[in-house]
Image (cartoon, rainbow, N blue to C red; front, side):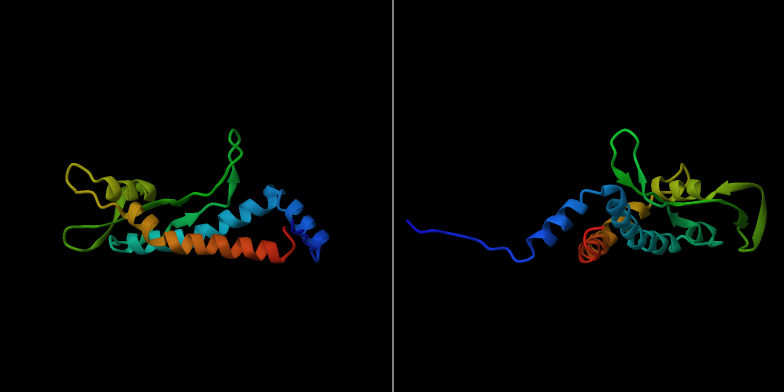
Length: 151
């Protein structure tokens, strides 16, 4: 029978790197935060198609990665934030609303429609169009973590 032997060069460095990857509290948030940028850009681009005052598209932001208390998974949220008290009247002039409207509500009206307005799935399109960029950003950050010695 034949004999097979592997001699690993840098075996200690490899083991150290693999062990340090177990520290998910440092590595996973970095990877998740890297993914938020491309999705945020795609959602802003989709929202710009519905721009009137620009408040909703300008308010889209990603949160920092957080750890879910029950599952322990990391996540980020990309959403419209804040309120807008400006509107565009039928005559095309900008007016001040009596009561401000949350930008997230505007996004929901566009996404799901209303009784007077059809739906336009901007969130779904943003997710689909940014998928490859999100995966590439996550892979790039992961590779950076590996090159740094695992986190």
